[in-house]
Length: 333
Image (cartoon, rainbow, N blue to C red; front, side):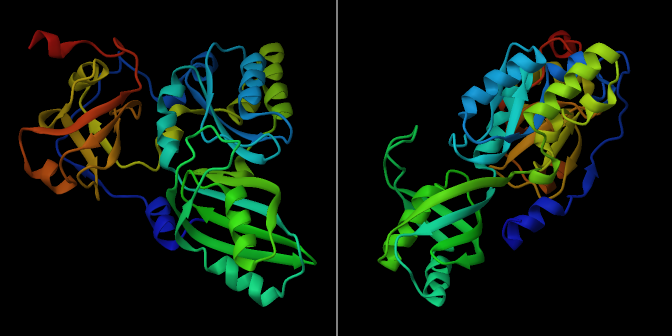
């Protein structure tokens, strides 16, 4: 789990406020649960359990080959030797991967100390890294090596056996666990390095719901050869699953296509909103059928949107839905 504050914001669902009662046209769009398997494969999310050895990009290539799709992307790169949760987006769902850039992560790992150290000192040193820390990315990293501020929400020592420390850490996205272990070793004045690492959570993707490459292959084969959809439905979810933890604005059918063309969200187009939306929040724009339309930045709070009759309440940051899914009513007005 993440820290208490993050856990509450993640696990307590916001209330939905209805601004205006409107209906949705059944002739356009489709509820996520009604999509065909082919549609799901072109706009889905897989919670993959990455094996040790291949790079995250190599895993992308394997998944692409297994399920026969043109585009694949992952959220939150894992080192080749690291294992665990690696969210994979298929087809159009790759547009939504930005949601994972700021999502918190949880890891379980083994830190190897270079010299024996008293257990109490180890515990004290690890706890001192909880909170805001500064890191310089390791030499083998894909980003510029400059000093960065990151937050450690929790550092739990599970077991200490001789010079090996089994730990669990909850941290902000972009935290380098390998660097964290080196810094702890430096503080203990004994040296340390990361021996093993497994990611157990990335945003709302958790270890117990992850699937292996073998399970993915078997599920796809069963669907193709036996037309059995139950197995494949258990390994791939609609893209909307990726947006679950974001506050949402639900819009009228008449506003959907305008947003698909990059328009901002105007108050008259809003049907429902989640509570607790604040200015500058990253939010998800949904249809009345529960389809993800876009990622946006809020310009008004929930209360302001409810109270106002006009104005722009959010700017579109990333369009998720294809143009033409809903009619272009906005062009005729």
